[in-house]
Image (cartoon, rainbow, N blue to C red; front, side, top):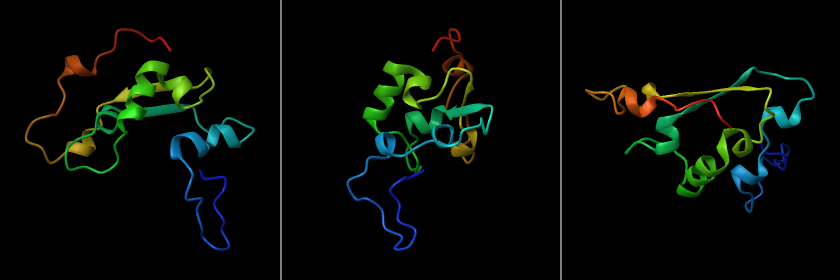
Length: 108
């Protein structure tokens, strides 16, 4: 959510950086509004020809800091990764193998 968005003029702050300046719902609401976050590998990695992908710097920050710090998410929320199959549903074969989707543990 963009906390600087002006609803009267429908103007955005042109100097805003989405990841740094936008707020997640868990940063705005005082009560927990969902159980956790699902993150799609296809969005993080990016699939050729598909909109909605992380920049290289976002990918690096996510891998370096982990999902909790990257999303500024309290640790009592659950997290889950998934392939993002809807992103590549038109492909003949899945983009990822099972091995590429498995994790080595639940650390954050």
